[in-house]
Length: 458
Image 1 (cartoon, rainbow, N blue to C red):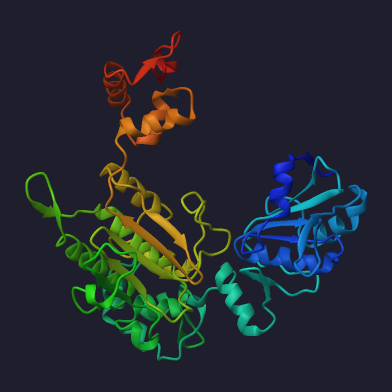
Image 2 (cartoon, rainbow, N blue to C red):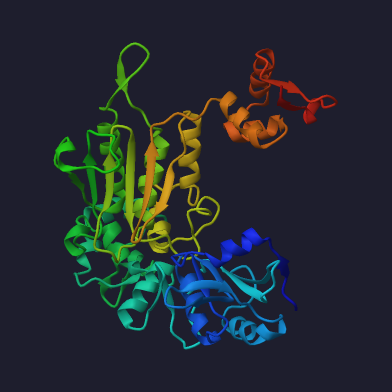
C-alpha cells in the first residue's frame, strides 16, 4: 500500500530542516541504517511519542543542515519494510512522505504515538527517549523500571517480607471484613483476592489492610502536606506556615484524612471578598477526586510520598511516577488505565469507597471546578511524577468567552456557547445572547432561527 506524498511549502520545508532534536523530535540522514533508526522509533514509543524526519543531512564541522531525501518512494522501501516489521502502520505508527518545492528528494516522516506496551528496536532492545538521547533498557533494573512506567508490570503485585498477620489481624481488616458478603475469614478472603501468595502479603495488601503500611514500605506510601504563605511559583522554607504534616495509615483512612486536612488548611486562607475577608473555597469533589487519583494511580515502586502543597492561590498535588501505558495529559480525561488494578478494584469494595465512580474521578473534579466558576485543573507530566495544579482563578465571564470564540470563528450557536462557557441550561444562554445583542456586541445572523439560531460580531 503506497504511503501519502504531501507537497509542503518552502517555509514548512525550512521548518522541517531546522527541527530541534529533543524529547519529541529528531532528524536523520537517509544514510543511517534502518536498524539504527528503529532505536529512535522504539525510544519515542516507550516515552512520550514523537516525530522522526529521515532525509536531512548535517554537513561540515558546524553541522549545517540540508534537505537530501530519497529519490522516490521505492528508494525508501528498505526503511519502510524494516520499520513495519517492528512498528506496523496504524494508530501508534504512521508514515508519510514530504516533498519540498525546490526538489532534493522526498523525506520520510515517521509519526510515533506513546504506546501501551513496550516497543523494542530491531536488535531486540527497548529504548527510552530522554532529551535528544535514546537510552537502552538493557539491564534488568532498567527494563523493570520501563515495565513499571508502561504499566506492563505493577509494583503492587510484589510480595513483602512481613508476616501475613500484619494484614490478616489488623484493625482495618476487621472493619472491612465485617461488611463482606457472604461472610468470610480474613485470610481466606485475602488469598481469594490474590493479595496473599506463598504465605506473604503483596504490596497492595499491605497498602490497604495493614494498620501501618509505612512500617513495611517506608517512604513509599505516605502523603505530605505543606502550607506556603505565598503565591510564588515555588515554595520555600521561610514561607512555610508550619512544619509539613505527614498523613499515614491504610489507603482508605489516608485518603479521607488527607482530604480533611487539605480542606481545613485551605479554608483558613483569607481572601478579599465583597466587603471583607472571606475563606477560599475549592469544590470538595475536586479535592477528593484528585487526591484519591494521586493515591490510587501513583507508582509505588518509587520511594517517595504524594506531596500536597497549599499556596495562597492554588493547591498542587504531586504523585510519584509518570502516566502509565498510553495515557497522556491530552487524553487522560477520555482514556482509562489502572496501574494498580488490585488497589483500584478492592478499595472500591470498602463502604463509602473513595473511588465510588471508578474511572470518572478526574472528570468529576473538572466539572466541579466549572460549576463553581473556577478554571479547570492543570495536569503536567514531569520526569518522574505527575503534578496537578488547582488554581483559585475565575473562569472568563460567558460574554468574554463568547467574544473570544468569535475572534476565531464567524458565528456561534447556543450549543457551542454552552460548551465553552460550561453553562448547561439552554434558556440561560439565550438570556446571555439577548443581553449581548442589547449592548451591541453581537447580532443574530439573518435567516437563522430556532435551534439553528447563530450570532456574529456586530
